[in-house]
Image 1 (spheres, helix red, strand yellow):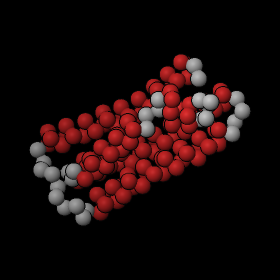
Image 2 (tube, rainbow, N blue to C red; image 1 turned 60 degrees about the vertical axis):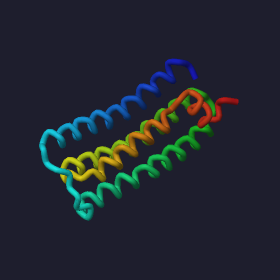
Image 3 (cartoon, rainbow, N blue to C red; image 1 turned 90 degrees about the vertical axis):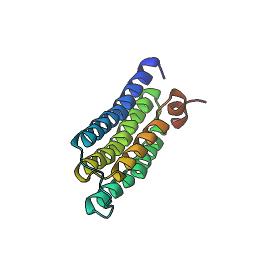
Image 4 (cartoon, helix red, strand yellow; image 1 turned 135 degrees about the horizontal axis):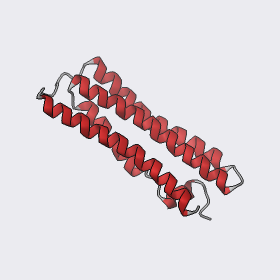
Length: 144
């Protein structure tokens, strides 16, 4: 994998995590500027539904990533493998981003801290599964 291919993967990954992070900062700022106290009613259906959907998106993104990477391993040419793993990273990040944005909207609407915790966990997963060069090569079994 050359530097240009890896840079494109890094730019995509950084863009996805920065999108969620910037939206999180904006929504937290709006919460504190509004002066509305945090909601302690955790049985609100909006909170339960959005948190459940956000939590369900995390393993769903991992499952989709692993299935797309397993298909990419079967391809012959390294260029096709790189294109496939780039698509897999985009799909995983997009699924995680949907859950995070949904929870940010729930945080803004309900003023509850619980959806914000789910967003924090999602950002942590973005950082834990950041596509380093060695991880990409290992996932594609190209490091041998």
